[in-house]
Image (cartoon, rainbow, N blue to C red; front, side):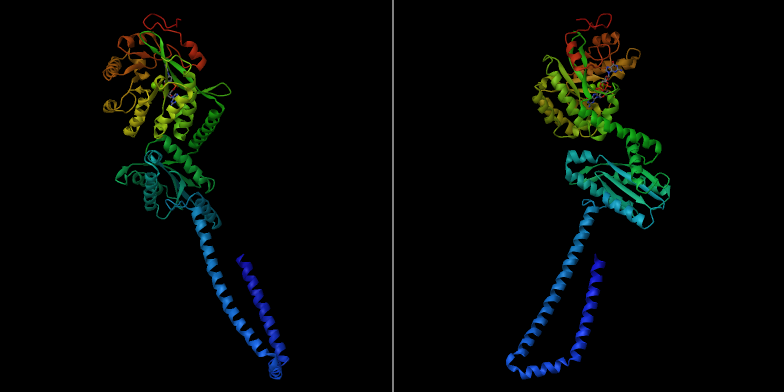
Length: 521
Ligand code: C2E
Ligand code: MG
Ligand code: MG
C-alpha cells in the first residue's frame, strides 16, 4: 500500500512540474505579464486587480490550510500505526506476565523460517506449574495471578538469552538456539529449584512446583514447530513419573501419551453416551448377615462388551479435570437408584480428592439429593486419607457442610494413606473402612492381625462403625466379626452388580458365622 502511495505522489509531482513548465513557457511566449498590466490599466473599471488580489489571498490561505491538514494527516497516520502495533502486540502477548503467547510463538517460528534460522539446532522445554490450579481454585484468581507473575519473573531471570513464552494456563515454554544438552539440563534443574521457592502474596505463603519436559531439534523433532509437541509429550511423562526430575522426550513415551489422549477422548464420549454407570457392591452387617448398604462403583462397559477398570479411568479423569463431570453423572444415577431402596439401606459414594477443590462441591451434592428425592441420611460419602495432605481446613469445612445435612462420612482404604492420627482426631468420621490389603493377609500374619485389631479398637474408641473391605473367605468374615468389626464387603458376598440386580439382592441374608458362603433368602 505504502509503495503504491509513494508511486502516485511521484507521478503527481512529475505531472505538476510538466504543467508548470509548459504554463511558464506559454505565458512567457504570450508576454502574459505585460498584456495583463495593459489590460488592468486600460480597464480599471473592471476591478480585475482586486479580483486577482483576492484570488492570491485565497490561494495563500488555501496553502496554509492544506499544509495544516497534511500535518494532521501525518499525526493520524502515526496514531493508526501505533494502534496497529499495539493490537498486534496484545494479540501476541499474555497481558498478565507480558510474555509472548502461542500467537507470539507462531510468529517467532515464522521469523526463524524466513531468516533461514529454523534449520539450526534448538533446545526446548515445557514447564508445567504443579499446584497452581489448586491455589487458583481454593484461594482465588488474585492469588493465582500473583503466582504466575512471580513464576514468570523467575523464569525470565533463568532464560536470559532464550525465547520464553506462556502457553496458557500454568504452562510456559522456553527455547534456545543451542545444542548443549548439559547446559539445558542444568537450566531445567534451576527451573525446578527456583519455581519451588515459596511465593509470598498478601502475607500468605504459597508453594508450587514445576514439571519439566525437554526436547531437541533435530534429534527429536522433524521440524522446529514439532518441538513444542515433543516437549509437551515429555512434560506429560514428567507429570506421570512425578520424580521431581526433568524428562527428555522419548518416542516410546509419545506412544503412551497418544494412548492416554485416546482414552481421554473415549471417556468423554462414553460419558455422553451413558457407557459409564454405577454398579453396586453390598455392605453386610457381620452379625445379622443383612445388607446395610451398597457402595457405588463406576463401571465403564464399552459398546463391544469389554470393561475398562475404574483404576484406569478414574485417575485419568482426575488428571484431566473430568472427574467432576464424571462424578456428577454417576452420583445423579446412583441417587435415583438408591431412592428405590428401603430407607435403612445406605448408598456409599466415593469422592476423589480433586473434587474437594471445588468449594461448591457440598452444595451440589445436596442439590442432587433434593432433586432425586434421596434423603441425606441415606448417603455415605467415602473419602481417602490422601485428601488431607493438602488443606485440612478446607476439607473439614466441606465435610462439615455435608455432615450438617445428615450425610455420613466414611474414611476409605484406611491404613494405606498418609494421614496422621492427629488428623483423625481433628476430623469426625462415622465409619472407618479397613483396606483390603490388611484383610487379605491378616490370618496368616500375626502382625497384620494386631493392626486390624487396633484399627477396630480405634474405630470403636472414636465412636465409628468399622467395615472390612475385600472379604473373600468365610473364615475372614467370621474372625472379623469376632474381633468386633461391624460390617464387611467383598467377593464372598457379592461383586459390584447393576442396579436391577442390587435391588433384587435386598432380601438376601448371608450366614456369616456358619459354614459356606451361599446366600439364603
Ligand atoms: P474402593 O473405593 O476401595 O473400592 C473397592 C474396590 O475393591 C473396588 O474396585 C471393588 O471392586 C474391589 N473389591 C471389592 N471386594 C473385593 C474383594 O473381595 N477382593 C478384591 N480383590 N477386590 C474387591 P474397583 O471397582 O475396581 O474400584 C477401584 C477404586 O476406584 C475404588 O476403590 C475407588 O477408589 C475408585 N472408584 C470406583 N468408582 C468410583 C467412583 O465412582 N468415583 C470415584 N471417585 N472413585 C471411584
Ligand atoms: Mg470406596
Ligand atoms: Mg476402598
